[in-house]
Image (cartoon, rainbow, N blue to C red):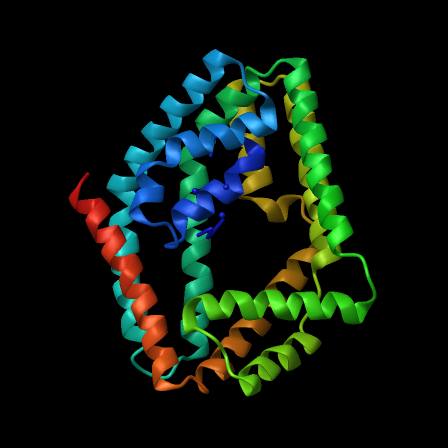
Length: 286
């Protein structure tokens, strides 16, 4: 994505970079010019020295070479599959497949990047580690502020955000379709507060890793735990809530897809074919 160029070599940037490379929402220009963007993002979180900036750029370009060779062909096949799935009524299996596929992209990308992430964290000076903690805490405070308000206000924000995400693919929804989304959101599991607590817990684990100065194998294992093997430390309640929410979103998408007009279905297919053309062109130039 985006799943997650959804944000690589720094912990705070890894989710967004991996998802942006992993999901198929990145155009050719953005993909080919990702290196300076990622370097800027990592610098924003860690206040890199001049030598470190060059190091991050070199390591990211190596990672991107791997991604172009090993991952883009998988995206190409999956996008062809996705287009085929939109030529018939969307099923719950289709909606689950999308979520599962994007998460697999993220996990493979992060797993490949772990040794370089470990190297970066191990070379941080104390002031850089502190800069990271302050930057991460600032983001958490911003998220907490955005989640303030009564239940009705938070629900409205979640519904409008989901509508915006859907319309990226379908074009504008009609009033009935928008009401359908809002109605489903009303009964969806709200994970916003648990997500914030999970984020703060993740920050604490990483900060402890950086402070303890472990060996590289231990650092890689620690990062894998916090970024991939999350069930080993994550709240069981949050794990269950995420799974429930994901299923609720999948059910909503199936119901909504049944109301698509021919133009909306064509809009979805055009969007997917555009991603497919971008990925195919990137493969051809590797």
